[in-house]
Image (cartoon, rainbow, N blue to C red; front, side, top):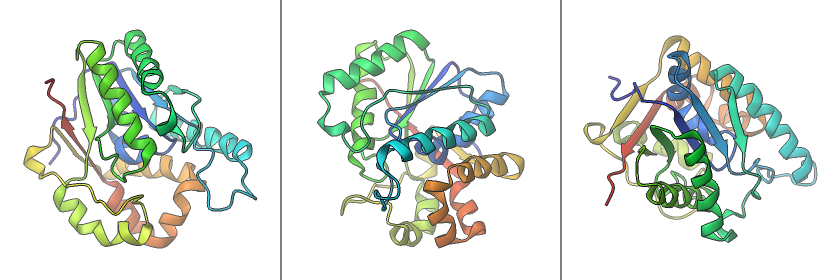
Length: 239
């Protein structure tokens, strides 16, 4: 059952690295774009350090590839406004928090979104870049009067339980901590993709093969598709 997926626009979708947005909100953004809603997607970095082989893939080369990959993925999803903030991959936690929040605030003031999508405070995987982007977005949202609806990506409980062992084998977590899953009834947005929309999200993910191929090979095409099929968000209530 899908819940809360007809989001008001414009939508501002803000993440740390190219592929974050497609894993966590690719179906949601594609559906919104199909409905004629403006979607602005933002990556804080180009993901230029996202490789286990930095000799073969130095940052300049990998960053260039990931920008190409993300352009292809956004084309598949129907998102024609994708921006990079130009911060260093892996270094967001060292950026002055006021600088990061100001960059996001400028986006909010320009785009005037009705809906903002980003990470929950745990960043799903406890990646420091993910956690930092969540803080920047939340701070900027507060500074601009909490006028937009702020949605945080979270693991849905039943889906997470089904794939917990896969995530451990995949090695997605950057901490000994694990995110607390959220029951379906407590979600503001709960999307289960199928048919053409799921195929479209998978095509976008496959376009970013430098990042997604290892997971596909580890899990197999069918299992990988099943884990990509669910997107879940909670709504942040202004304090």
